[in-house]
Image (cartoon, rainbow, N blue to C red; front, side):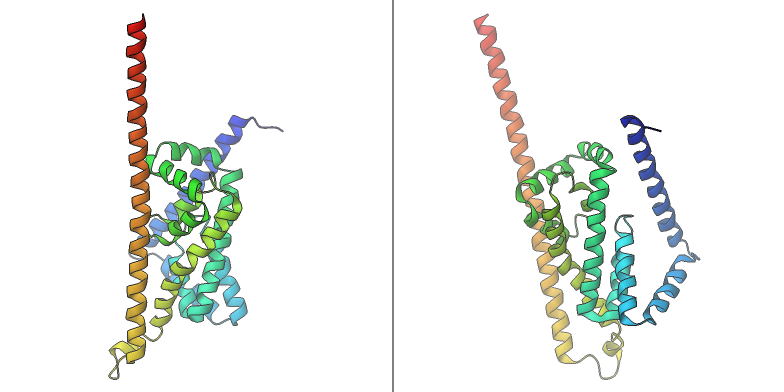
Length: 262
């Protein structure tokens, strides 16, 4: 039994729609006042925490991998990783999981939903501009996009594969995810001792200074990178507008010359 290109394209669109409905339903259900989803997740995470460190870290990695292609927010899982494993192992586990998940998305985009993604991007000027910048700058700009919170991780996963090769995508994603996951894991790891802040003794001076310094550096980096990325987008948009104006001017001049000749 063979399918035409049009039929395969239609099937792919239906698959995307079904996945979107499932994910949206789960998300909306979790927002209900008496939703069982948060309780179920809490029970699962507690059960994982009681396992040995190798098994639990493997499971948390797998959860990250599964969440990324389905565009499920990974931050709650990363927070759990920080609480369970501490800053170093938590960062490693969450970064590896998210990177593998993003690589899976790369192949899904290239071989399953490429047509649908291109149609969506062609309707959005900002996404088209972003693709152009990434195409010119490669892994460096991919890294910056991963760090900046302005551009959601799930959307970036799907709009990059059409214009970059695998190596640039994988390296840029891995490097960009490390600082993001580190910040989340660092503060979630501190949550296990957060009661120290409100205790009679309070948090130790060194720990408090370290937390303040980390916060300031992290926020400054994120703001700086976000500003740079947005300025590059605005610069490219301005150049494109100028180019379009020049093209229109040249066309008008040519028309006038043709009229004079005739």
